[in-house]
Image (cartoon, rainbow, N blue to C red; front, side, top):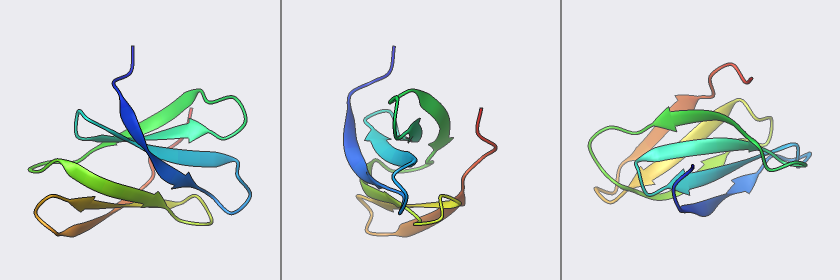
Length: 77
């Protein structure tokens, strides 16, 4: 069961979207089915906001420490 999450945004073609988990994970979901495809754990801080790049290759997270973190999206299932 996935944790509660906050919306993070869609890719340009709406095939993927990112959601911020309250467990310090940014989840990547299939934009059509809503099924989870991948997750990226953020170390050190809780995530305040996240976004996915228009091409679906990168995630950016802003933590409560006001730092931006850039992550390459792992290979999707």
